[in-house]
Length: 89
Image 1 (cartoon, one colour):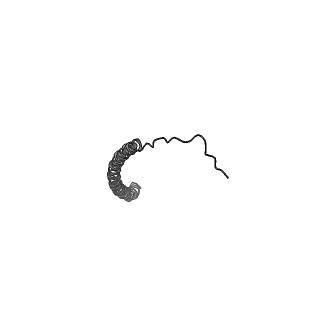
Image 2: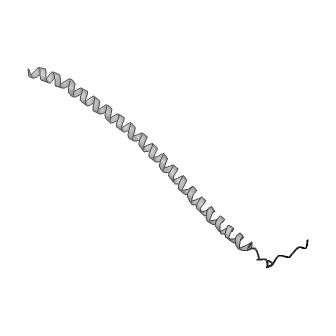
Image 3: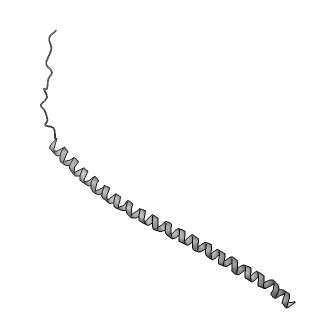
């Protein structure tokens, strides 16, 4: 009876080891894919951060230029007549 129990346990144990190894391989492959995706996203994030910094500097320069143009182009107030001239019919 012990031989039959051992005979049943050996294939079960072998199958369990094989499935575990297979799952480990899949997990490793998935981890490698995730690592490459994370690296790609980090690279993209760095590029976007540098682009945001550049655009922020450009925006600040344009604001300064706009303010200078506004100051330079202040229209002088014209004197308006208080009363309209009457027209004769």
